[in-house]
Image (spheres, rainbow, N blue to C red):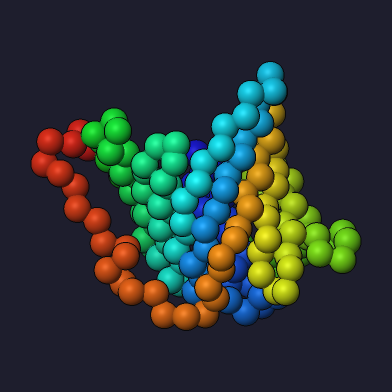
Length: 169
């Protein structure tokens, strides 16, 4: 569930006037530090064509893709041979939320979304990282590198095929 919230959060944050970003392609490294000190690190590529078309393409340590289209999320997990389909039940007004984001230092903004406090670090009008602690007390940081901003993204990247033997949940 927390990835769904983060996806919505980032998508709408990118569409806020602060950055004037209409599309984004970026590599990412997502680090999760659990309360016991264990660290899990994921890498992949994020594609955002507009505020309604998003793909998180996880490459390691497992392959997984998370597709957002309008109010639907599709999570494809090849290692589990399953696909999850979900629909967002409520769409909060993210743009209003980000208009209220407060600048807390030269490159850092802070905002609250669904009782979670997010810190957004920006460099050169690009998101450098997003950090937050989830409700399970995990500390999550997503760093973004190799960004391409406001360039056309091939719509084929967002297409997916589900092998017939995958479980659909």
